[in-house]
Amino acid sequence: MGQDMHGVGKQRRWRTIGFFVMVLWLVFMLVGCSFGRATPTRTPFPTWTPTPQGQQPAAGAANEQGTAPEQQAAAPTATALPPVPTPEPPTPEPPTAVPTDTPAETPTPAPTDTPVETPTPEPTATSSFTFVLEAAEKFPTESLAANVVRIFLYAYSESDLGLSGYTLRVSHNGSALTVDETTTAGVPEQTRQGASPYTRFANMSVVFVEPQAGRWEVQLLDPSRTPVGPAVTFDLTADERTRELYVRYRQE
Image (cartoon, rainbow, N blue to C red; front, top):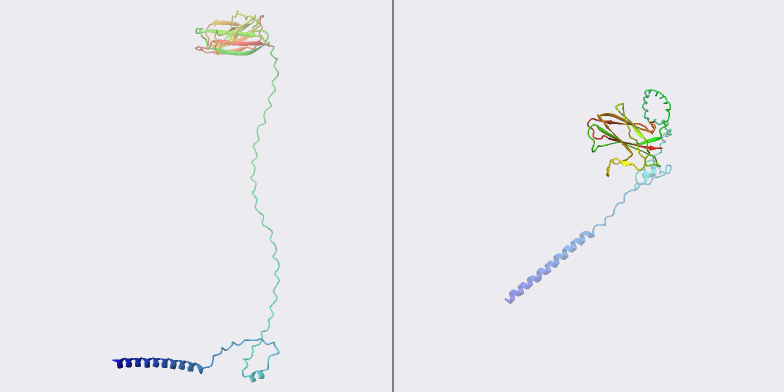
């Protein structure tokens, strides 16, 4: 068994020696192949240098130089260009007029009629009344029967609460009625005994019994029965309840 182990170790040593011999042989072969070859050089690209005209070498000299490059091409000559015409400035065109709106024709107004001059009214005579009519009212009656009309009068001045001796001219539908009553001086009476919207001062009253419908006209008279105040009219209907008439005159 010791011999067998010795034989195996010997075989391993020979294998190792053979492996190193083979590696050395391969290295030698690679170095030997590369040693005989020259190092390649890069051929430069030829460049062209232009030669001025008249200094070019003769044709014979060019043929004598076997390593010289081929004869250079003739230098290009400049060709005269035709003159460029100078552009003329364009003729300016007149600006286009902007259209304007045509004004619409204004219609001629139709002639109007000339107003006729109104004649100036002639002045009338100024009233000579010495009393001013301050009030003319109608009150609803409280106690009068149908077809009974009562008229109240209050005649006064700024200095007198009541003027005496004055009366009324009364007409009904144009017919004059008889009036005997006259005003009294001093503190006046009232149209109503108590407070009422129809309570007024009065210093004379007169009652007429006849058909009430129609127009009643009343005017102030002085003690001589001369009109001293403007007349006033009242219109009553057949079934009207406002049959109490009231007038107030103030002396100017």
